Image (cartoon, rainbow, N blue to C red; front, side):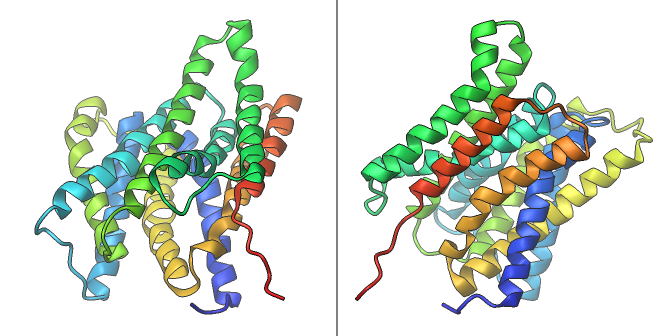
Length: 296
């Protein structure tokens, strides 16, 4: 593995920017499109980008053996269900808060990995991090649970948390797969997701009378091309050259960017409990990161 260079830090910044902005882009696209149509468009545009990258690299999608089923499972758990849940949630919950709840994902992966992966073991420090992360989520959801006055928002929050669990399942499943070409498998998974949602997207969205909302169309294009397709390619470039540990920083930055975008650009309301929850969840994410003892 290489030592991170200016190039890798720039690519990391790209991921933070476009994955952080993705939640705001989803909110903008939902002004004119059904959630399923947003997800289908995102997967289709992302698949086109990854297929171009795969062709440029002279790679091939594996269609033999169990790989078609594996790619379908990867798409269902990592794209179709969580993307749809996030889009559905953003019809009921502010995009910044949904992005904040997504910070629970690495914590959920750690908890599941403790039981399903040999190298992901719980330590006292990590246990404190898990507790802080869940405390932040409870703080966010507490007012809707106990007040009982906003059922729609509560269901949106539950959908967002469920999406993080889907991502965790996807992460665990990916780590248990045999060695594979990540670009080829990702391209195949995005194609599978696009095909799975093609029928529902055509049925639920009225494509015969296209929306004249230019901001929604623009958000959809940026979301699919730059936040899904290009971002996926950038992700694998960084992982292949400097390793996944370098990317751990995005677990703190993306939720914060999503929250700031929602508040500043989309004028979403901000409450004190959200700021405290953000601090608790990000502190929890920091505590669960693996610690490497320096050799003396």
